[in-house]
Length: 216
Picture 1: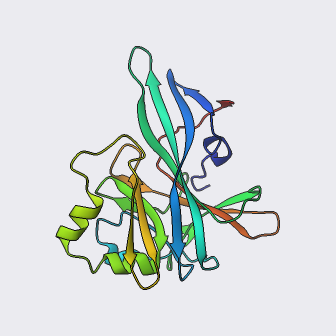
Picture 2: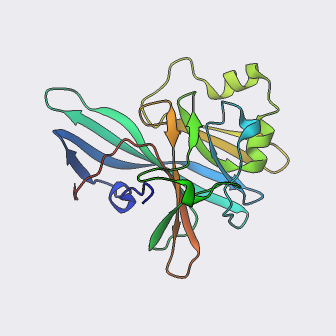
């Protein structure tokens, strides 16, 4: 079956996970509010070709939604812990998530995936975001100097290294970037659903946490 992580474990503040001699301690970090004027959610590295980023097929009501970075302190025996953004969660409804499904864009079909496969968005600048399609299209019109000044700090702070900026003044649509796990790669997003079938959240898995059991 396609890749589906144990998000119920990853999205627990204070979860302690051990695997192959490595310990991961999870902390929830609120990083701001995402304005969605259209309700079309795009997962992408917005600093790389934002004009080609496609929205997910599942939409939500326009509004402002909380964004959390789930940061893992990764520790190996004898070494200092490294903070890495393990997941990025856009909260739509404060209800228990009963099931998760891989987020798709137009033209993507789960039947095309092999065992443990997934669709995801490519990261080449070490950052990711969930943002409205309006915000991403507006960012695509920025000059590089403006992108550099707003989103690329001279010295990158520890994870989640969040940067928040309004990219579309007319709607207030913004882009919040965070550091992406171990850096560049291909990262899947999953959509959570409540018992009534309504969307609870979008979660990008930055593939930091391996298959695990947790001590909470």
